[in-house]
Amino acid sequence: MAGVQWHYVLKFIITGDAAVGKSSLLVRLTDQRFLANPDPTLGVEFGSKLITIPEENKIVKLQCWDTAGTESFRSITRSYYRGAAGCLLVYDVTSRQSFVNARSWLADVREHADPHLTCILVGNKLDLCSDESSDGAAAGGKRKREVSIEEAELWAKEENLLFVEASAKSGENVEAAFERATRDILSKVHRVAGCQTVEAVREWSGAGGRAGANGLLLVRV
Ligand SMILES: Nc1nc2c(ncn2[C@@H]2O[C@H](COP(=O)(O)OP(=O)(O)O)[C@@H](O)[C@H]2O)c(=O)[nH]1
Ligand SMILES: [Mg+2]
Image (cartoon, rainbow, N blue to C red; front, side, top):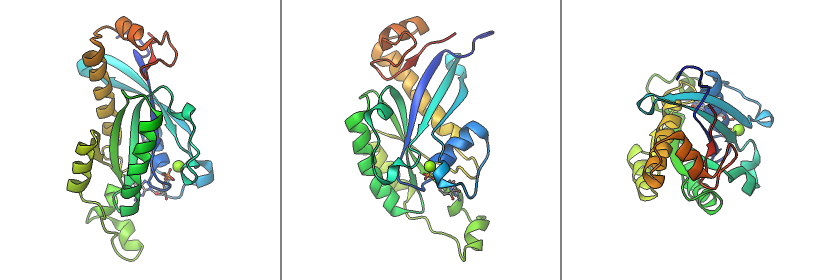
């Protein structure tokens, strides 16, 4: 892969209730850091990251869009969803309401995004459930998990979503969540389109380097 910057560019969107940690996941992915008290008005909107998928021998550039404040009034426009190949649907494992609301976020995604889109359900703030959590203690007692793994897993299965629990704070499973979704997207490209080469994928996506009809942004070498 010498000299290759990236093979595929995939657009990801990050949705879910306010304060579940969407911006924090993006900052963790792109910047390897965590802000305990981020300013909500400075919500991140965009970040990119190169990841390698060794078994495919491919470098993928993830372009990730964060809802950045619009979640409180649901004003996300179609252009936000357009061309997205992947979606992180985020809830907070210590907030039952955020899990319940994930249903309507998913309905939005299904309504507006491409049908090929790969969606991964991400239960964030896993660190708050661990016994070692010092934050919980400081806040006057450990915060309780309100959504079990089993329940989330079951719903993810019913809805045909990938699923992972993660923590933007510790970094656990953050990159892994994006990687799993990316692998799924690439496997769809091979399976659905029967495309094995970068050129064939470009053809299939109808992209020619721009957002394609099949939700992929392609291809630069
Ligand atoms: N303990 C813990 N706190 C988190 C985690 N992710 C985000 N937060 C905190 O939750 C609050 C909301 O995070 P933010 O990323 O702004 O959420 P957004 O509104 O979904 O973008 C902030 O105070 C973050 O520091 C996490 O994984 N663990
Ligand atoms: Mg935010």
